[in-house]
Length: 573
Image (cartoon, rainbow, N blue to C red; front, side, top):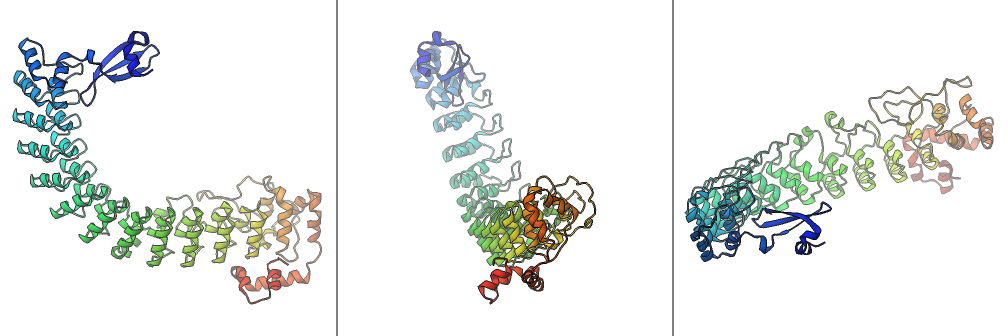
């Protein structure tokens, strides 16, 4: 039901009403229905107090008649503390205000529940005539509200320069701060009101007063990108390199928020681009992290590379982590080291102990960024956990091939989960095409088919995961036959062993692998392959691969050989 219809028939739909004063001084009514719900509307004319109605309408003659008749015109509100002076100030009725002050001058600095005086309400409502009237009657401009805001601070908030001048002329404290340490100058700067800023500065506003969080007005100007106010503060001698509680400077915040004009002005005024935050970051770091291309290009020439090295993290890391490819390309072109490593302190913040920008790109699955870094000379084998292991877990054939093309170690193992065979094999046991890709690029197939127990009986299987990224957990050395015998993998045993046999010479399977092949009649032919000697064709191919070496196997395709021979070497004949 709409509020209007509810008020027309309150007895049928509502149990009782409650009147209250809103923040703008308007009297309102809340009706509660029988189902417990509330409907709120402005107070109907017939429920408004006659004195309040007269004040709102500005009927001075009627108000005088009420006073002459002995009518109480002091407190006419159900809200504690809100009186007729507040009412007149809120509605801009300065003539009624003068009449009321004549009768009740003691109410001039009275406060409502939010500790707002009539003067504060007049300023908040942007009623200049009422402000002037109250000040002429001696209202105190330095009484704060519940949040310790003064009338001057609120005048800056509503951006009324005339009221600011009126308040300053009667002694308003230009440097009095609120509960958050926010001064009138902070307020004016935040709104980029240069006129009010200049009025406050000429009145003696302290230019470097920090708020509760250590933010000075110049910091606020840079943070909000208010270039005009920022220029004025610098003109009046603001400390351009002042730092907040976390060590951030005005330049750092302008870079963080992408304010190009503010950054350009600060650099023009010689702001220090090499001041670090408490986290050790420079403005260039934060600009790269947020992908502000133009700002990064401005900061590169003025940022000290030694400072970046001492910070323990390169802008490349942050650009790669947040997939800011254009910034990443810009940094690479500027000559930043693509093999820069995170310091141990920063690396340990990640469970996998990543250290390179390449790892971030691979982890994000960003092939374009990874290719950019690799082409610039990034080494794919520097991280504690190799990026190729991450790419394999993601199942990205394109990323794996890219890493292999640039020399990724195809035989790498998990540092804290050692195996007698490459860990790369354990990741892609359920994906034969990926496994074949590894084998074609020099993965050690022979180590998979070797076993310390041979034809002897094997000990019982232990419960352990196929791969492990927990660097704090030690695992025993695992053999391939143990890995492939687990319930989650054993149904792939036949095809996997069959594939591996293409990349080895004559081998004898251990008893556990033999058991796996015996478990499925369709795999008996694979078992037979191990009994017959390999053909000369196969042995020659293995010999050629051995001579080329695992790291150069992927480059066989680039040799000036007949296509048929290339296919033969890649098991594609």
